[in-house]
Image (tube, rainbow, N blue to C red; front, side, top):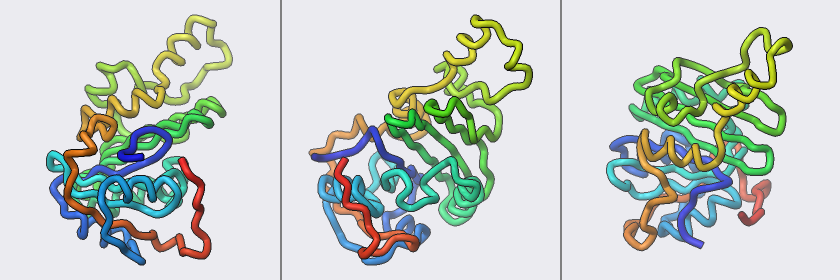
Length: 212
C-alpha cells in the first residue's frame, strides 16, 4: 500500500533535504527506500523521511514511534521547538481514529507558534498553545480549549464547543492549508528515494511490526 494519510503522524519541514531531517531526528540503521516501501514500513515502526514534495520534506512515523511524535507527551512542545531551531519551519500533524486523537502544531526558528491536540475518547484538549490561526478559524476547528465554568453550561453551549473539535479529515485539511496534505500526493509521481531509519528510542529488538 503506497502513501499515507490517516492513523499516523508526520512532520512537514520546509526546504530541507531528507538527510538534514534524518540527522535532526537522530535516525540510525538507515536505509534508502522508495516512497511506497518507506511509508508502508513506517506504519509499523521507525520513521521514513521522503524526498521533498512541492518544497516540503515529510517525515512519517506512526503514533508513539518515537514517543516525541505524540503531542500528549509533556516533552513534545520543547522537542518541536528544538527541531525548528535546527531546521527552520517544522509542522506536526497526527490523527488516530480509535482514541479520536487529532493534533497539529507549527514551529519556526525555535518558536512554537501554535499547537493543538484533541483526545475525543477522554474529552480532553491536552495541548493548546498560541492563538488559533486564520485557517483554524475559517474551518471552525481547534479554536477552543478547556474553558472555565463548563459545569454550568447548557446543552447548546456544549454543542457549540463540541462543534470546534476536529475529525481526522480536519487534520488533513489543516495540513493542506499549512503545507501539504499527504492524502493528495500522487504516489506515482514521487519517484525519488527517501531515508528510512529508527529514532534513538527504538531498536530493531524492540520494534513494533503491527501493520496499519
